[in-house]
Image 1 (cartoon, rainbow over the protein chains, first blue to last red):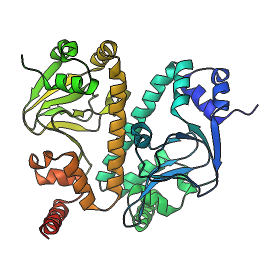
Image 2 (cartoon, rainbow over the protein chains, first blue to last red; image 1 turned 135 degrees about the horizontal axis):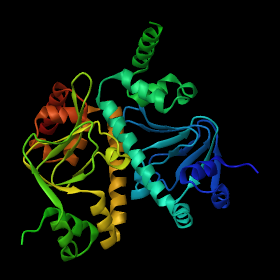
Image 3 (tube, chains in turn cyan, purple; image 1 turned 120 degrees about the horizontal axis):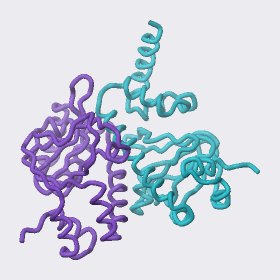
Length: 196
Length: 196
């Protein structure tokens, strides 16, 4: 029997037997999105968190001047969601889009309640995910405030080693808050340093 | 009897009688910091969340070039903490400093457990605080990625209406990720628009 990667993810993080939760995770709603398909767009209220089993997703906004700004990439085993919209039941300002053909698990509040009931450790794990997101966003703000494009790039490479090879350079630049030309300069400078 | 503002804050947000929790909150550790005094600095593990009863605090970092970057201001009734350091028990990268003479409540994990036991609604409230922080940080990243200094400034004024009058302009510029000259231009432009 094929094991879903969401099952493996939960069993390895919650330290429980796969059998104990595979019945739950197999019944989850799954959906495959085509490359470039939108999972979600501004004005909608987000009612799910998406777990990426295969593929790659980005969360982004478009400013009044029409420029895209990428908040997050989510490759395999990442969650992506507009938590503000889910939790506060507010219309989102963000797009969520598949950058490759992508299979996701759609996680709703009901499923979270079932998990918390069956696996008491899940509540702590969910709390850990929230703190992890705060840690990640706090570091992102700090990096965006500092003007050092090279540091931003190196942090990106460390966090998303394979995303770099899967998306156009202009998307990496958009995530980093620098121009594509700025990104190109950083890469050349790093290549020069590595040669020395 | 003087009512502490931490007591008022909890009773109004948790919809409970002040008497039910005033015994707990009166026993909390409180401390007064002088203007410019550091509550906390990089390398230390943060073991508290600070609730500001009176005064004003900032959380900031200093980059390798010696430049300050302000992550957060916390006036009265705000919490401030390095949640990454508290939760993951890691040395912090941030400074937390009083910008005026400031009285804070020091909240530790033990106090949170007591509150959760005495007031079951506190767990949901704490969860709401985490989501609120995620909402705030996510919007901050989005604003920092977009190049519109005016939008950043207007969001700041809305969120921190009185902080604007209590800190030097260079700190506002540092929070917004723009130069003091850029901030000055934005303010002049807004004044010009308002006159029309």
